[in-house]
Image 1 (cartoon, helix red, strand yellow):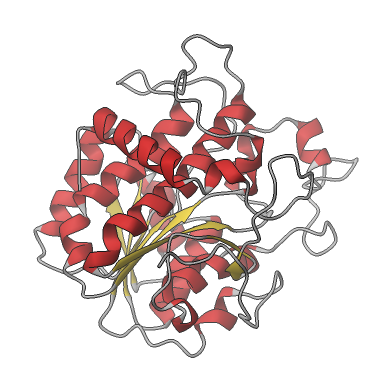
Image 2 (image 1 turned 45 degrees about the vertical axis):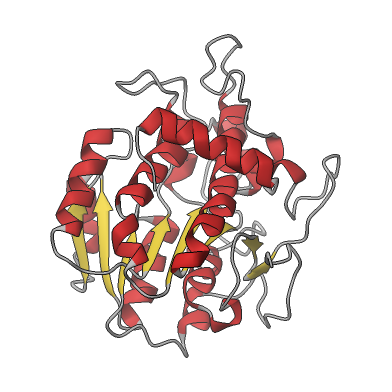
Amino acid sequence: MNTPQSPIASGFNALTTADDVIQDIDLTGKVAIVTGGYSGIGLVTARALALAGAWVIVPARDQAKAREALRPFPSLIQDKLDLADPASVDAFADRFLQTGQSLHILINNAGVMAPPLVRNAHGEESQFAINHLGHFQLTARLWPALRDADGARVVALSSRGHMRGGVDFDDWNFERREYDRWLAYGQSKTANALFALKLDEVGKPHGVRAFSVHPGAVLTGLLRHMSVAELRAAGAIDDDGEPIRPPANNLNTPEQGAASSVWCATSHQLDGMGGVYCENCNIAEPLPADSKEPRGVRPWAMDPALATRLWKLSEDLTGHTF
């Protein structure tokens, strides 16, 4: 039986922090990988898992930035990974698999948001390539370690941005239509949710469960491609260009933003569950396609047929299968 896309009595809410979620969790002996775990909510996520006893690997594209960010946290293990480069993904996966360790938690946290049109060496639009395809390939390559964990969880960082629309299977790469950076972002975040849905179906017989997560509206480095006007509209800066910090702007702190990822990765409340889109440390409510409410999950991000179609496309594009 599939897990219903319906809220449960989790006891948590939008103000819950990663520390609140992890306080009664013991991850001693567990191994975790958190992509992008050297900044923003990724760093908070990695730190929370490590404090609970997990051995946490943080693969990073920017090695110098990661080294500086991780310096205060010697228990976090730095490695190298560029999700836009399939060869880099393979190299990282090979290094991990050669250790012979099982992988208990994989949090696909890294991503980009609304950049100008950039394509990788394979000609793939950067948001779809990094946010989805890179993580699809990474998860596929790490599949033996996940399967051997005797109970693993994969968390895909989606976003409320999925509400902007589904995956355009006729032109996912913006080759025939004009590039819209926000539409491309929404497509990639819908892809993250559909990936978790299908991965859970594939992984369930092997004890691997998957979840997608909206972390909340959090001020992080993801905002670097936004204009001053967009930052002001988002509540990131005031009229003088000065940063506005939560809770004055009604946005989440990184500690609150990381909470749902940590909850999906570790909570015993989710034992035996998977394949659902979560927010505010709970399973999100499904809402109709035309809903204007800034919450919940839309039909195109929880459709099993679309998830299967995306899975096949991703296998074809990456050349990797499970």
